[in-house]
Image (cartoon, rainbow, N blue to C red; front, side, top):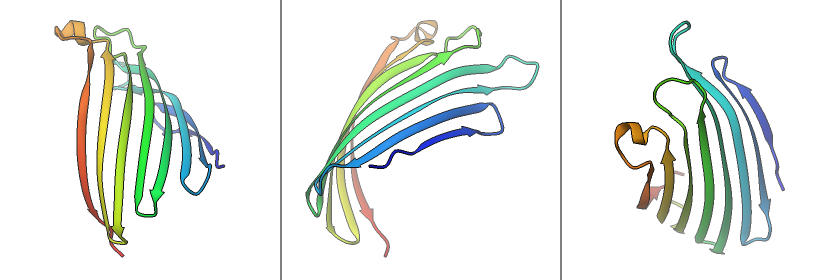
Amino acid sequence: MIAPCTAANTRGDTQFWQVGADWTVSEQWTLAAEHLQGRSGMGLPGAARVDIDFDTTYLLASWLWRPEWRASLRAEQFRIVDRDGLLENNSDRGDGVTASLFWLPNEHWRLGIEWQDLDSRHGASPLLGINSDTGGDVVRAEVRYLFP
């Protein structure tokens, strides 16, 4: 099992810490998790500024079905808390699920398909006259050439 932990200050207005773990349960199964939490700000000194807290967490299970096939399932949640007190509320929170299937027919090609469902609730939506519960589903297909 690998479990790194990181703290960072970007020499600006963003500071965060991160912890993650990766566990190879067997030759076929891998589990992973990560959490990131911090604070960020944007704007010119003396002017109105953006000031937010943020955090996100994910859990992932990945199954190597055969040497050339891999299936993965990921669940995640995120949150932004607007702390600046300006007119618009930039708070946001949500969760999502991603399922993917990849096939490596040889050492140079990877083909995949991925489905993602996201549910998000944005604090400024009522101010904009739109539904605060947003999100949706997306399906992506991938064809990738891997250079030697």
